[in-house]
Length: 83
Image 1: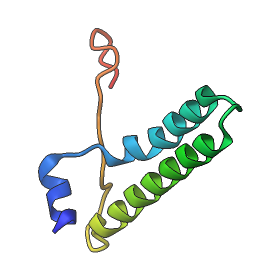
Image 2: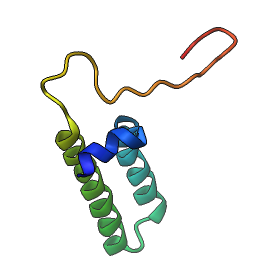
Image 3: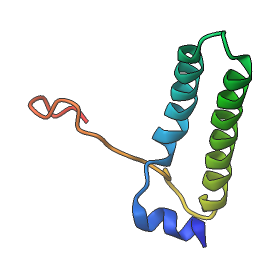
């Protein structure tokens, strides 16, 4: 099942879920107003992909577990120990 594969891959789904609408809105803004049908299509693709990621997150959520789920940690400034 897809939900079980999510844990195996250690996929940063929350990060992608936050970044996907930002990338979509930047892409729509870069298209310009000359072709509104392309802008609508790009916005639709961005929205549907964000909704699909949300459903994937919902399917992989384990309500019986305590603690945080889908946590991703990134080292920002290693000299200061900030992550």
